[in-house]
Image (cartoon, rainbow, N blue to C red; front, side, top):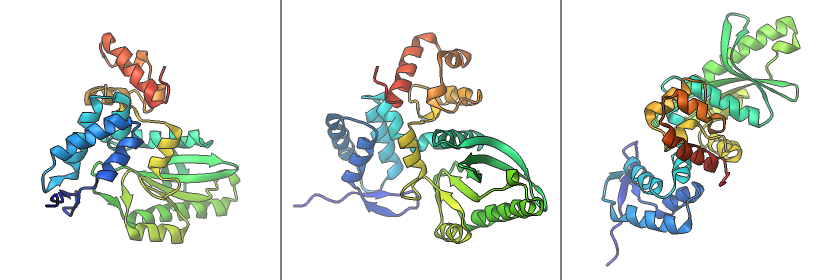
Length: 280
């Protein structure tokens, strides 16, 4: 008799067959070892039931992984860590700025730029190879919320207003060569279609295939402090309030300021080293 196929429920309510290979791949990407992956997959399979939510499966796998490796658990929950940069969008803007700095851009966050009709507050201004980019960051706390075509239309209209002002003044310093939209969730198909047509650069968690937000984080290893499983939610927020968004910028002085007990410093800083790829 064949084993019954377990159906898991996505956030949309749609039910799909549980995919063991997908779970294994996500654990591999976190840096978990082969032995740990096999044990975690087996443990998750033993607790599955028809109609279980994908979120519950994720929580179960994360809790099992955390018992084996804090750093691997941090990488596994990377997407959740980006959502934890809220509730305001400012830490997300800072984080995107840091990613672009890693790629060689000169970056300024929260800049006022004069347009033809009105002035605009631009989330991130990035410059590289004599080209300047106007970047709008759309942060959502609801994973199911997508940036739709209205967002693409709005950002394009702002870009056009700034461009019109530039053409009037013919001042190279105010010339933006392209508008970007970066979101921590996804875009609707219409938003992508309009963005391509209008010449906007769209970046979401998994779009485009080359240059997605996830891929940029993986390559740069610029993990947010919210990825640290050795910190509580409140402790992470206190550190974000200090304008520290990257693990690599975190030091014991910040931990002390956040009133974290010193006997935990070693564990926290070791997790930081492992996330950065330093096993020493």
